[in-house]
Length: 218
Image (cartoon, rainbow, N blue to C red; front, side):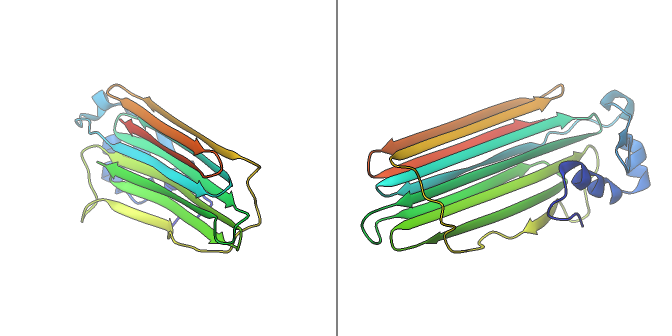
């Protein structure tokens, strides 16, 4: 099992170490990262894997801040495809009125057509008399091997479980209401598709809101 701090390359190598030798030979992949066979040479028909990652953040109060960042990258290696992505959303709020600040953040992942999915999800949130803060982070690796599937269906490996609640960290938004979000999607291969969407909204002395999604198909 890869550690929670493992980089995408280590996570992918962990997945390939689980595959039988005949599958590795068929797709031209070998543990340690040596991949040498393309789709034509493998003789295995291509398959599609789609991953959508994103999230949202909202903060209510006199001073509010919401930010979001999403990235999603996929590549068709011939006998197999890999998509790697992450999303981070944060919200904070402050109000001169006790109980007048609120903040929430969430992230999500939807994957179709993958054989292995490794995901790391964490969330934090809390509030005080005049402030509130929340954050959510998600990172994932999705791998599909053409012409082969694990027994029992796709394997999902959770490195962390969501819902970890902690007190506010003392971080306060600047004066005013701010919202900023970035989403990027990138794909490499013959039959690929990408799409992104973002929204940001603020209302003076009331709230800030952002959401974003990045979709990759390889």
